[in-house]
Length: 292
Image 1 (cartoon, rainbow, N blue to C red):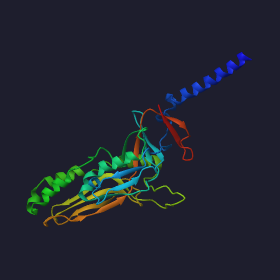
Image 2: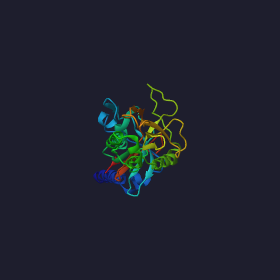
Image 3: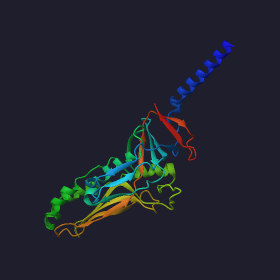
């Protein structure tokens, strides 16, 4: 009887140890098992993020909830065994960006906010959709103030205005959109409906990309933020929203400042040492993960 009980105990121990070992085996690593388009469940370890007016350019500080994105889609399995996931839904809260200050800090601020929607235990880094090593911050404010202090004939000859345009604009945003299109089937998205609030149709969200227009014949400068709007289907024909308009550079200054209020769409890079705890990667049973 004693011998039989001992055998049973040893079998149980063996099963438990085997199960623990398998959970952290290479075969069970997230980067090894997931496929493009699979669903991953991950909740933020923060509940709120405060956006300083000095960064957004908006007249007031802002506070957004960061714990309402839980479902993510795999868009890239990287060579270093990290995995990129994009939020299936858009956040509930919009953020407000305004004027030259908002334009200046735009890309860096959106990346900061994107990180808050992840869980720092699992997330190596984060970005907003469209980020591809653009400048986080650009010094357009100082340069514009210098230019606006001049009369138009001087500005017209001044090459620094073209430098401003060149340094702050980009078209690398399509990289992320291509990944999302392939993984999800569409770049359009909306917030997740709840019993308290139903969302219908698609919603606008900001892309981490700036654009600008400059015309020396009829003097003006206009600054834009790129976005995916509710009708966007072509990833190479993205709309943009105006944030600053200096259409009369002969005047004493440029007073046309726009305020943009839209959502972001975070992309998280999950660490290489993450393993699958449960789930099959479907929407009904997304992968739940643990870290070794």
